[in-house]
Length: 117
Image 1 (tube, helix red, strand yellow):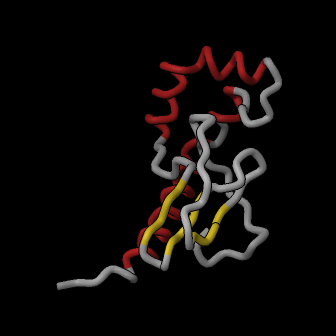
Image 2 (image 1 turned 30 degrees about the horizontal axis):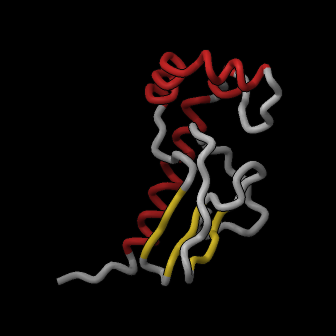
């Protein structure tokens, strides 16, 4: 998290099993237990993020309506990266509001390095 210490934790949404290797000169700024490369910056100009910070309660509910069967099967099979429907939907408004706040901080910090004119 921007401006947070190395032990700061944030629960995010990640709707896929894809991952990536860091580009050359990248500095990892976030990691997770199921995906090491969650976010990175390159030369303080470029940012990449694996998790979905842009989620809203409606987007999460819509995702579950469309993909809930798959997620329930993965959770039942013991996939440690998949939470139950109940866990995912718990405190959804507060969690997505926190993600929005973090995303705004990340983009504000990133925008400081942009050149104008």
